[in-house]
Image (cartoon, rainbow, N blue to C red):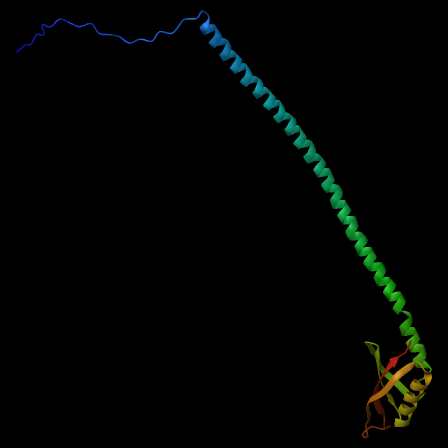
Length: 183
């Protein structure tokens, strides 16, 4: 079955927007487009130039830094050498100051030792002098102690140990005493 519409056709209304036509509107947009392209290109050129300048500045600063690092390393090496030399000089000074004490000690001790006393050990720790030796008699040890006290150079003379070996001939007395050297 076929249907046929016999009603008269209605005209359709069209909605259209009409823009006012200005002469050269395309030319204006073209110039605006070229101006924007030129501005972006100019800005890119400025940024590119600034990038090159900053890269050159960074390279120059890194070169200076490398030179300064070398100078700093050399300065640190000189500083370490100076500290080592100062330490050595201080050590030499300390040794030269303390060098006279053993000579003075031996000189003072040589004047006090009787002929029949032999010293086998002499040790100084914290200003206390420990002397060990042998003698033919206890009287010789007593004379040695009296000589130490009488010299005025030794203080606090104390006998720590005195032994006499009865199995050996001659009978030798071994002794150990402590004192302080008064310099």
